[in-house]
Image 1 (tube, rainbow, N blue to C red):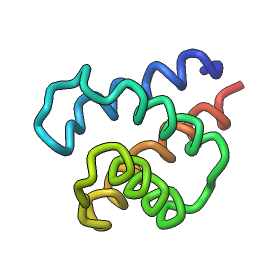
Image 2 (image 1 turned 45 degrees about the vertical axis):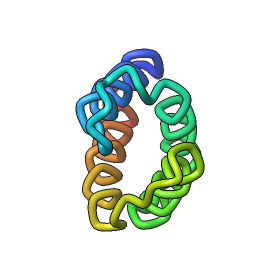
Image 3 (image 1 turned 60 degrees about the vertical axis):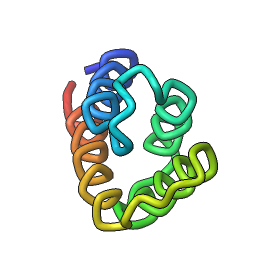
Length: 86
């Protein structure tokens, strides 16, 4: 899987997540920021805290860290899958 395909998968996961029930197209800016964070981070809890901060900054609403950790594991699994393919 190349970077472009990985990014598409990450975006699809984040669109499906929809933490504030606003519809999948409500989070374009946040999704872009989270995809970048996935590329930069490797630990689920660090990524989860970054995800929480990104969405809180934009929407002034707090997402429980446990929810962010769940999504961070999904995102990092895609990243690992992409790095393991030849």
